[in-house]
Figure 1 (cartoon, rainbow, N blue to C red):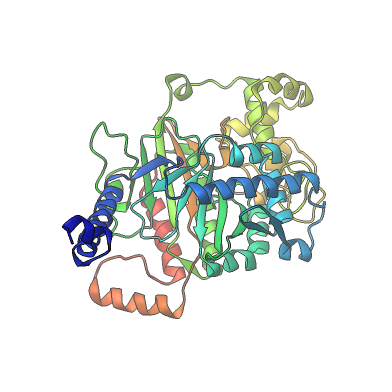
Figure 2: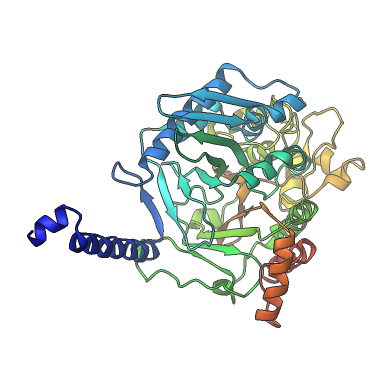
Length: 458
């Protein structure tokens, strides 16, 4: 038998050659993945093309179901426990707590049609390959507005079991920096493992001019990433040690950020979680953005966007966390709020960081800023519930400083401080004596991240 015949027949020589080829391909694939950090289009040759095609089809149908059956004005316990299964040709898609997430999307000023369009547009999804140790797969919609991340069953159950208090937190602090979860789903493909995934609003949207991205945990062990070569198009998310010597320069917005990080991390401490990250990115402001003199119309528009108080994530109607207000509406807003000139001057002189919101249970009415800031009843709700949002497509995660625009958000909130994590903590104490590592108790983690923000802002 010839060498070729032996290989075709699966003989020893052929088997040895195939084994060597497979090993070389696996090693080559790993090296290629390490080199190719960043975003890659999922075309028909991509290993995730089939999965993401199912995601697009399933999500389109799931959102259409919400369009046809809008969430009720008052969410019930059944809405939080609801599971809807839709059958497709090659798979089934399950949607968890659909009315709750639809209500949150609406509170963000997002229509179901635009959400559906982003998730199911003709453009391919993008795969995001990072230097994260997570085993999850990350995808972005073609417009980069929404992240889709695979999760394990435990993480999904954790989110769903804490969904009500998560929603209550966003209701109380609608300008929270916590990542906004917009949907939880599961795909069932015959003879394959179930695949859970969540949909999130991207903190770094739009990313056209972002020139640096950081994942901050407030510690130093394993917190350095080699930057991309100069001129490279590779997207690298840097870490704590890469940020040393730099500052987030916000001026009058700094007190708001410090307090909001404290509030959000205290909430995560209540959930007994750790290892979450503060995402930070920046881009230079245009010259006209740095020295803008806000017109009265623009100021009114930004104030209205920031102080709508007619609803909450648990009640549909007017959005409590406002979306963008079109520029052309500014003239109408001036006429609506004519006579509130004093209110706007109060907002601007305060740097936009002392706006309040109605306390829970109080009838919702839109109030002039002057009324809000002077009200004894609302004084405890000042500064953190509302701020003067920038006129931008992702205002909740964007803060403008004198020279730079910053994108800030808190992600990865699923790691519970379990017995296993406690053991990891003691092992790391032995391995890294005197050094700061990520696995510490939730109170310590909360305090340390707040301290990092305190030390790296001005």
